[in-house]
Length: 71
Image 1 (cartoon, rainbow, N blue to C red):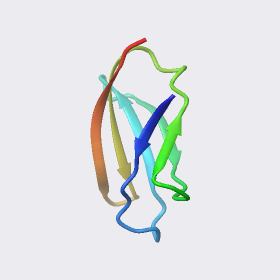
Image 2: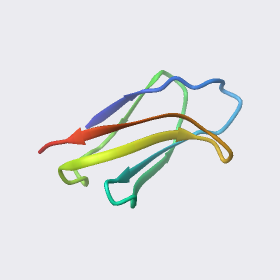
Image 3: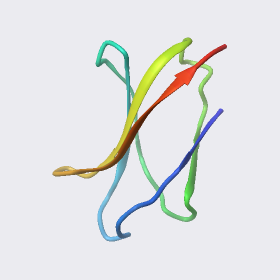
Image 4: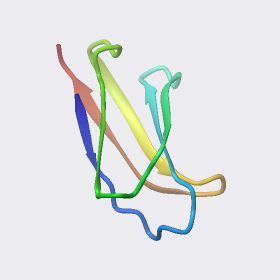
C-alpha cells in the first residue's frame, strides 16, 4: 500500500489524486475524502517503476511529486 500525506488548501473543493506512469498514462484517479490528512491506495496493481502524482481540482493542481515503486 502507498500512503500520501495530503495538504489540501481548503475543504470546499472536490479534489482528486491522479497518478500517472513514466509514459504519462493515467493509472489511478481517486476522489479524496478529507476526513484526515493521509490517503492510502492499494499498490498491488502497479508494477515497479517511476510514477507521478498530483492533487488537483478541475482547474488547478495543488500538490504534485513523484515516487519510485520497487517490488
